[in-house]
Each structure stands twice: as structure tokens, then as C-alpha cells.
Length: 91
Image 1 (cartoon, rainbow, N blue to C red):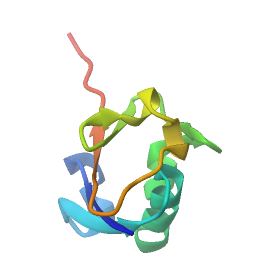
Image 2: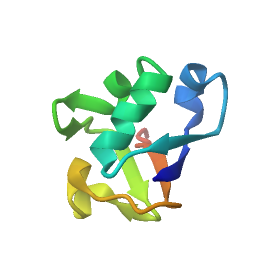
Image 3: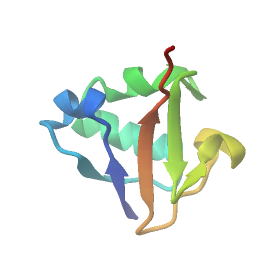
Image 4: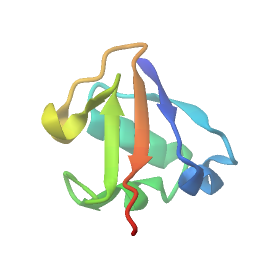
């Protein structure tokens, strides 16, 4: 099942500046694995360790934060949109 992944500006150097890329996978973890195959280095920017998103990286599946769903095990329906949103901090 193919989905659209929205890539933030900070990661576009890995996707040849593409703002959106297609990916496949039954779960969010599978999508990240597919992204890593196509865009080496992206997984290390998203994951803190096996099965764990980095603290300041948010992934939204059709507008819902995957942390409040089933995390990386969240099932991804065909045609969904996944947005990678880096947390913003500052003062």
C-alpha cells in the first residue's frame, strides 16, 4: 500500500529536495524502513533506537500523532498521508 510522506525542510537534503515522497508499508515502522531504502540516512534522523522515535520528531498519520495511536506499530491504510514534523523550541 502506497502512502504520501511529507518531508520537512530539514530532511529534504536526503530526498533530493522533494517535499513529498511515496512510501510503502503496513505500519509506520515499515514505512520508515522503506524510506531508508530509498533515502539512506533518514531512519537515523527519525529513530532514537529500535522501535523508538526521536524525542523531537513527530509523525502524524492523517493528522493524528502516532504516539497516541500505536506508535511505530500503527497500521497505515493505503492512500494515507504521513507528515514528519520536527518539534520547534526556543525562546
